[in-house]
Image 1 (cartoon, helix red, strand yellow):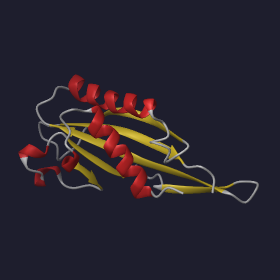
Image 2: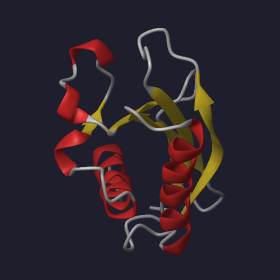
Image 3: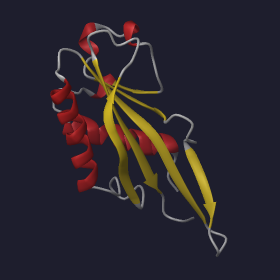
Length: 140
């Protein structure tokens, strides 16, 4: 069975491969104030719980197996990009996830349920994009 951290790390690796300017060291699990990030930390990717959605939920199947579903937000913060450029980077991540829905066999399926730009009070002139990702693990 996959762990939440392993799924987040796999999504982060997909994002780094999809967005050439995104460096692995600029991927963060959890959230940090944007003002605390140095100027060379952009674009920056945050992997965190999505709103009021549980990070991990378990469904009991009829044969007493469990199916685990992971839901989290991927926040992409860019500096100096237009809205269109930020959306293009988010779309590249979504496209890369579509090309390997199992995250290299880590999960049964992965999909993006939301994609958009956010207004963020801490962003200043930076753009903040958001993906909501759901990954479903093989029953265990």
